[in-house]
Length: 164
Image (cartoon, rainbow, N blue to C red):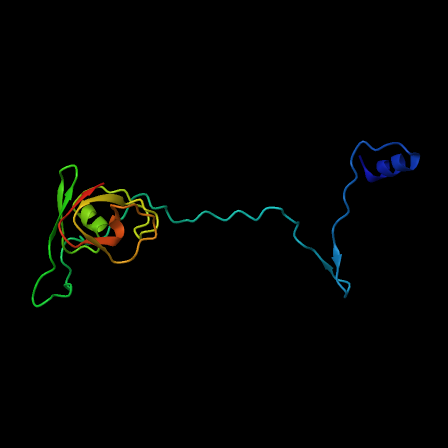
């Protein structure tokens, strides 16, 4: 329908079957220039997906935590770090000597341990200490019941037996 037809229909009082177009939204500046603003959107524009591929596999450290590094730990009067036996309640055996915590040591020896944060916050690496003593290098934030340890932030002080 043309504008002329609409004007005639409006002048005659006949109802229009088509909606009237909304007036253009122009803002006039003080100097008389018209500024066009982009249309308002309720949702933010969608971010472009990252062109990098997502990590599809778990990358473990390149070095084995149970192998001595080039810079050895502090030696006490020529003594090497002590070796502690780690026995699991299901009969598997491991040893702890160079790793920074029990979790790293067990992983290096192909013992599967459930974990998430590796810093003592989540409690996922919780295990039951059956026998022996451990030392925490940093106090864990997760709640621990009596007889429980977090493998991610403790090291053995003696031979230990644990239940995963």
